[in-house]
Length: 348
Image 1 (tube, rainbow, N blue to C red):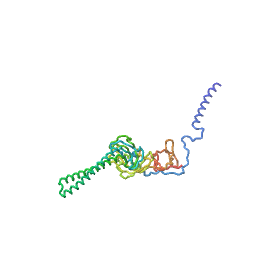
Image 2 (tube, one colour; image 1 turned 120 degrees about the vertical axis):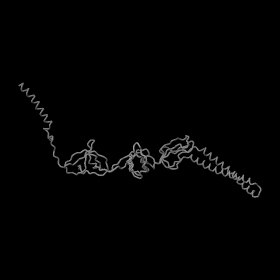
Image 3 (spheres, rainbow, N blue to C red; image 1 turned 120 degrees about the horizontal axis):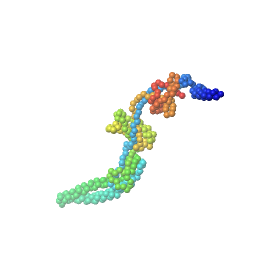
Image 4 (tube, rainbow, N blue to C red; image 1 turned 90 degrees about the vertical axis):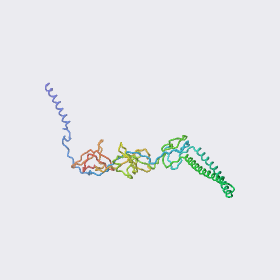
């Protein structure tokens, strides 16, 4: 009895182990045995042929928006800034008065010159009359010729002084006009550079101004591509900050390249653009060449985790194939790898 028990227990353990191994191997399931594939029915749905088309290869160059027309409005006089009527961001029109300088001294100069003119005119009038009398008396033989010459010299002297005073008055009025500062063109104020009460000197900037109706995009382009660009060419411009996409015209190609980067500076003119201001980041797009590209409908691409996959029909059967994609163009997407020309894609 004891011997039977000692032999039976190991046998039961071995039998249980064999049953477990058989279950793990799938002997008790309906799955297809390893190494045997199920026979799939042939694919009879729609297919899309993969063909190569000629695609323009483009490149983008970084740049920035600048104002084509900008200026620093400066004083022409040494005087105190009496008032400044604009601030950064204000819109101004051509000829608008934006600042005034202290003009008390200038007005005094104008008044002084006018007073001198009045006195000189009175003397000139008197001298002219005396010259006329002397000429009459000279004809009658009542005065000497030297007395006539003296009055003639006096008239000439006063006439010359009259001309000089007229020029002084013109200069004084011009200087007085410089005390009123006006903008040379319609634009937007960038910055106030001084405040009222400050003493400004000739050439000292008061306000920075730019014209928003004349903007440019400046970008550095590789020398190989710049050699094929011409004035008047139209290139696509992107301004990401405002989602702007617009064509601009090349107005200038700086003829000297950057010796470090081997790039040329290209300037493109744009018109008035809403919400676009100088300093914004921009890109220009230009064509490099044409090359064959495999394009497929974007809806045929399926996401598989972080990868893209398509269904390929081979010998009547459908199989998955992972692909690497490029740029989207409309409803098409470029396939960089994973497919070949004349492959067929299943449409589900």
